[in-house]
Image (tube, rainbow, N blue to C red; front, side):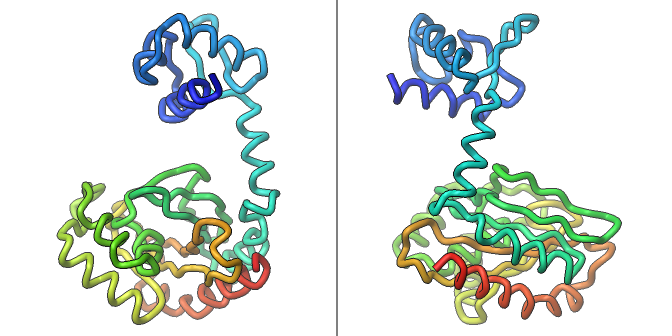
Length: 245
């Protein structure tokens, strides 16, 4: 029953506008009667919210509480928050932290910068690994067989600038390994470029590796300016590692 309930919550997380019980059951691969019973139980515990007007179920407020609890737990990444805020204040750019989850980068923390035109990346957002600087940075520390699996999987094109050739991506990841940081230019979002580096692993692999990035709009920040922030970015990663370790 727990497994079925979690499947339903995963389905609702992928459909933030909500689903009716039949659609939720079908997507989760459950009988409608089982889904209806489980959703009722989850709603009673506030893990799921039910809209009587639309007859749709969506994630409830308890999920946010769990998310906050995870961030504060030893398995979370709350230690990165203060260094990221200082990095964002120093550079004026938003600092974003993410982990590799399958073939996607999952954003787990963010800190707003001070530029008048700000990029916003919500925690919980997912992006294709190969289209982001965080994803390429995280791929650069993977064993060769895991990198090969990523390159053999589907490589979507969020923009016309996205590199999807596995051979070209392999060469780029090799460059990232050599220099210690990654960069992308409008590959995940038009008008946005970013640099990223991986937080050194000082806790013996107790949690997924974390990457930190700085994002910028092409109209406000040149490549030279963004590259100039790389030392501060790497220093932030080192500080986070010392706090998490």
